[in-house]
Length: 162
Image (tube, rainbow, N blue to C red; front, side, top):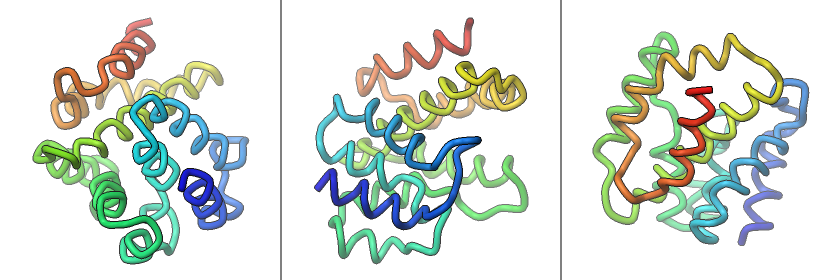
């Protein structure tokens, strides 16, 4: 299922780039961080941006990967809005209400944010890093759950503090 999700996501993202790199670089990094939380987390990691960034629908995700994966991808998909601030406000509000098995989406979101912050520090993208720093307290309030994926949060916060 992991290989199927990776191939599906890479096909959907097509020629999209993650900075100077093929989008698969980002997907592989998120999946690497999420993999310690199980195969389903890894599948969701590969698919986390397909609905937001491509023409792929949640129905397609559900048909190919099941209801839990589709619901998690739905949680991770930004809500519509006029600008980033509005989109994130709506999306974080949605994340703040997540509980139970759907908290798997929050693990993947932490893995995604860690991958983004790590990419900023590795490639000295200070502008983007500053944006993540400014959003962090609101993001944490919405997505953090005590004991859920502490290692990811600790690494993320160590990078932001350095």
